[in-house]
Amino acid sequence: MSTAPDQASSNPSDMDGRGAWRVVLLLVMGVSLTGLAVRAVKSALDDEAAQNFHYACDSLQARVEERLHAHEQILRSGAGVFADTSI
Image 1 (cartoon, rainbow, N blue to C red):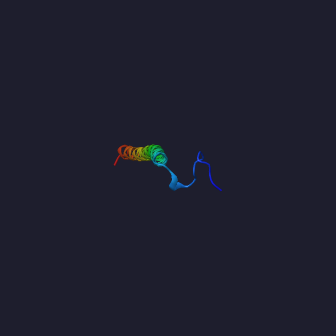
Image 2: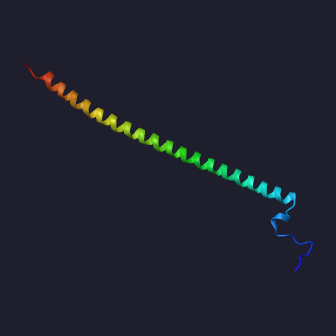
Image 3: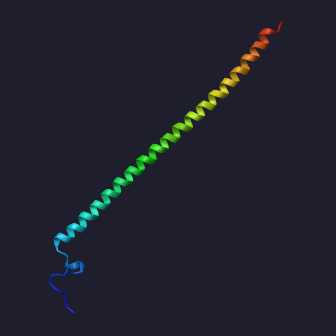
């Protein structure tokens, strides 16, 4: 069974130079696009992590300030009691 001369051969060793360059070009394009996609996803994840970190820091700072304000009020009321008492 012979193949017609106008049909492409499925044997990889029969590829001409132009076909090999197509494969290499496709490989390079695929790797490049994958690299760009990875970079974009990493950048998005880094931005989200930074936002979460800043939110956690702001929340913690607000809680500390609230506690300090409460302690300040207790100290001021204690100072008022001592200032009002006569010895």
